[in-house]
Length: 352
Ligand code: HPA
Ligand code: ZN
Image (cartoon, rainbow, N blue to C red; front, side):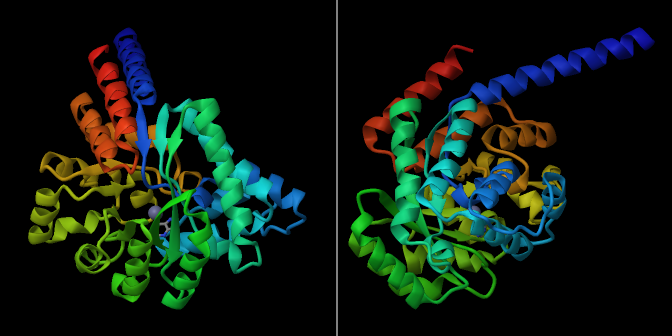
């Protein structure tokens, strides 16, 4: 019997290795990723030293210990504090490049990262320092790693609409590198309606529109994003499941939801991955996608998010490929690139 147990354990290890390899090599697309949320503790310390900034942590294990959150605000406090080590263009370049190397490792072939300009301009870091550092790394990734991208600028919803409008106006000179606008930070008490004017202005400037909604906030915030902000994607959106009429609307219009499984469990939106509803929503026909949100803070990048779904819910190859097909449909890549992405996915699936 001991021998048998050993053999089962061994087989299980091989099976899990096989699914890890399959999910890691599967071509993936990331549509919900805050670049400031990719700051790994090692880089945090390196930049703090480089920029002579005092951190409230003495070592990496103290940092990891601090990454226990009971809600979104808990996380945001630590996330904005971490961002203070980013001062110079090279810092933003290094941050973005480290993320893109991770993408290469995990076969993430198209990314649409968010950045929060107000987090930096409010500390006196010029807008162009931030955009240039990030966009130069994205351009290098296209050339050297074959990773395509669309950069999205988010407004912080805990700040005023005037501040968002000022940020939008400033962004006008970077319209070649910024492709869309989004809305993030503390959701409760900061409904989409607060940003109706700035989203309308952004639409008129030709930006694509997305917004976080239905992460901690109610399904009604998702309705407002659709009907008042006119967004093309909803970030998170998992509270839609509380509202059958909204579910029908999302299915009929194939409105994409950029869901972030590990984030949702870390921020206690779901008490465990076993209770996550993403695969139910997928099987009901919603255009749900898998994303990592703030991978340094939430325990993993794209592969780890897919693995977590597989471990807790059992993810079939068909479900995994439909999730990625949804991401390609939902992306802002140009049509030719979308076709390439579909071809990559299809040949991976059929050659397995
Ligand atoms: N929600 C809201 N704001 C954020 C998030 C999030 O998940 N990550 C970074 N800023
Ligand atoms: Zn987010």
